Length: 63
Image (tube, rainbow, N blue to C red; front, side, top):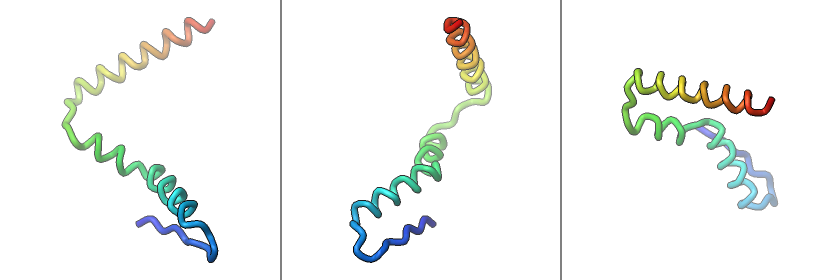
């Protein structure tokens, strides 16, 4: 559970902004999106491999 202490006289919008930031850092929404649809392990590995190739090409192009 996320707890955001609100100081006396503090703007509620600022406290809400802190809450949203803490909530994003926990990664709950990201986890929900990942669990929404099942991705086969072979597809996941292929995607990681493609990303690694892409990153390597980008690094080679910089040099």
